[in-house]
Image (cartoon, rainbow, N blue to C red; front, top):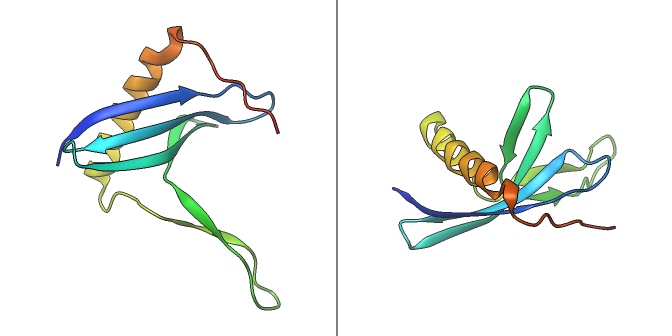
Length: 100
């Protein structure tokens, strides 16, 4: 498996730790969209696309479940390296500002 393309859309929103959204194309055949780039306490990290699972019973809490994600650390590292490189190279491009 090879990452053949990465696109990053930077996001600038006051008070938000989310710094961008990435899409990754694998082997020119399979796309993964909505990978979030987040500024954590120890630097940037990626959060894979997920959906909210609503609590149904008393005492349960809402949670999020990944829709797509790497199965092993080597593939996660491959995604991180490619996305962070694209993020770094996108610094000179216009920045999107999202409003709620």
